[in-house]
Image 1 (cartoon, helix red, strand yellow):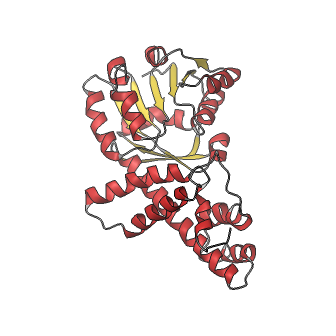
Image 2 (cartoon, rainbow, N blue to C red):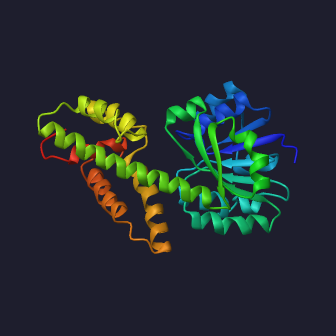
Image 3 (cartoon, rainbow, N blue to C red):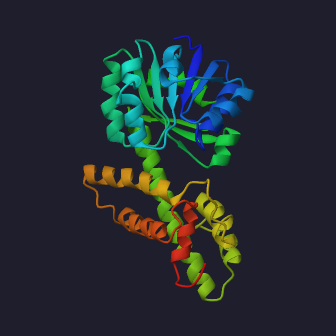
Length: 295
């Protein structure tokens, strides 16, 4: 299919940056849609056409990309009144780049197929900085043919683009990625809290660990850049978002009969962070709950 127009639905913290790269690096007409006017106004400077409604956004699109807060929003935009299942026509393609339950992806695929619409899931990993730089990791679930058609679009937003399997597989890989990130965050939060309580400088601890077998992206980003200096900003990947993603991972564990004990403990830790008033802060903030009376 000769793709002339790509529509991007959901211009939030990640979506706006992804849409900007799509417009700047791609060869397609790009249409953006969000319920808030501000990101659409900002993207006009990059040549993105603002849509007045979801129907307007998808009317001329060959491909519709969604980057929404979670499964509830994906369900509303696809299955809700005036949603994509009611609007799309044969020959179009829909891609969910949100983080959502694999089960939902596998329910949506045959519903779109019945309308002659291809469907894939392509959630993203790495930080907002990576979204701005166009260096995301994109994990795709779909057919090889759909993947081949979409790969040039993904290449404007990411540097690592992986076909993980059929529809839903991208979400499975993304959820496991995030689950491991959360659990590693917990481990390094414990490590720096114990080390500092025992008289070892936390910055030195992490620098030394980064030279050994405990090195990781989480150590260098969550640990060195945030925990070591007690910097837990808002407008980053918050505890509340982590709880949402973790809930999908825990749901998948239950569906597959896996006893995911670490994930259950992380749920408790995140809920405690929300109770402390840290729900909107970057997830390394869980360190605050390690020792009573300490940052």
